[in-house]
Amino acid sequence: MIKFFNPNNKAYEAVIQNVVLPENLANFEKWVEENRDEVKSAEVITDNDDENTKKTVRDSAIAWVQHNELTADFYDNVTRCALDVNNQKFNFNLQYLEMLQYGEYSVDGHYDWHADDVLRSDNNDARKLSFSLLISDDDEYEGGELEFYGPSGVYNYKPKRNEAVFFPSFLLHRVAPVTSGLRKSVVGWIHGPDFV
Image (cartoon, rainbow, N blue to C red; front, side, top):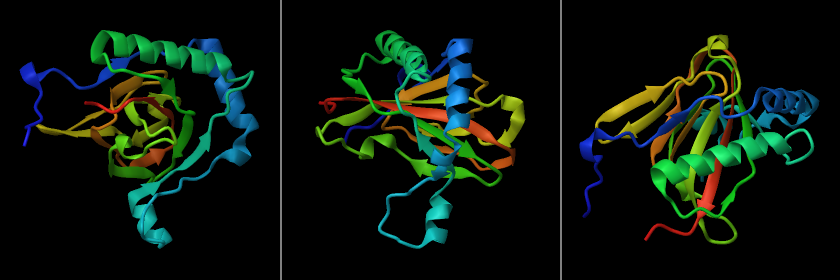
């Protein structure tokens, strides 16, 4: 068995501020308002069909972000940032960005411990680099921290507006319950061939 450890206590995550240009963030928020009917309760992939059990795993609303005139520059900003982060920190073999997912977490909203790399695409490749980009102002909600479970235990981030946390998709993470307000974010995954 190979022990997974963090040499010299280097962080597995990269936190980047001002990921999206202000005008592109405004256009994205316009897209959200124009597509409110697309924001629906998030699905959970599980063998259990009980909705109450599913809500203990994930309680949020999501919409898949279509690439169009209002979102194209947003996608471009996020993609460029992700590639820069990858080149400077991770050096993963990456191929493409999956469609972005907009999410809202209201009071008690959460997403329990999970890793993103368990889902495979039709191309049989893997999610390798994940990110969470905060859309709301950080003072619009309480709770809702992005938490990671690492070799040293649990640690968390509470990003600010337009700040993203990039991390390897195999890291266990969760969104802690929101205690007040509304947490809005965009998450994304960049795929590549399996690690060898």
